[in-house]
Length: 113
Image (cartoon, rainbow, N blue to C red; front, side, top):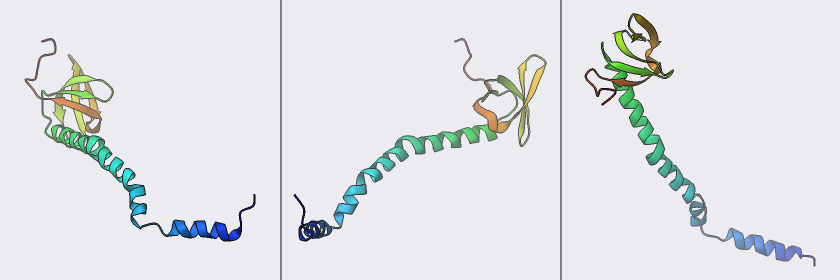
């Protein structure tokens, strides 16, 4: 069966008469998903990064740190970009402060308790 041009034009005209709210209802799920992602993933990560930056900036001698490479050591000295870390008696390494992922202040919880 062949559709007549008049019938096809009438169907297009009926679709054009929908309300302007139909466009908003179509994108509303995407907006809700973005809001959920923001509050469940983006905001907590930003908060964690702020606390990590604050702890790195306040890092001082004898704090225990963990680097992104997995080295655990005690801070010997700190400057603007680097931190010298003692990973074993008489073994010191110089690491970039940006690679530090955790800072535990002096007097923290013992490892085996």
